[in-house]
Amino acid sequence: MTIKLPSLEEQQRIVEELERKEQENFRLKVELCELEPEHLKSFDDGFKQPEPHHLRAIIKLTGMSRGETADFLGVDSRQLRRYLSEPPETPIPYSAYRLLLHKAELIKPVYIGLGDEIDLPESTLKTYSEGFKPPSANKLKELLASTELSISQTARLLGVIDRTVKKWRAGDKGISYSSWRLLLVECGVVSV
Image (cartoon, rainbow, N blue to C red):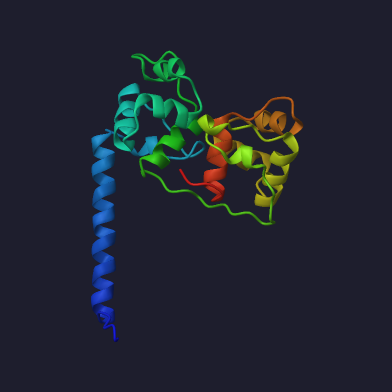
């Protein structure tokens, strides 16, 4: 059996058309959620906290129910309501917001990559409802060492201050579910 492939010119045209459609789809999603460029920027690059109506539009775009969204972010339904109230009772943490943007395919993972093979306990890779257990301080240190991210780079990636990362590394404070999950997504260990 012989398979005839399109010419290189035709393949290039198909790729360009797919890229154009992807860009148009992205533009429509951004318009639908009424997002400004600052809503899609990284924490240290001019990030702007989203309004509750932005969050509701992003959640709608993901196709998740409010209960599924709360579980996806590792919070209870009351906390999610606080993020979505007008005005918001609590601003959504940067890491939770970034997870929503990933789920809605409004941003792509950085794929930091892991330098060395790392053995993470299965319980740290589970979703919140599947029995997630936070990583130990040693496992967090091991993951960060493998990525070669500095404390400052990790803090900027997750939208926290350097001191918070130092506390996580020392075991003085456990890393939040959304921060850990975002780190795993950005490293390419898990998908959204």
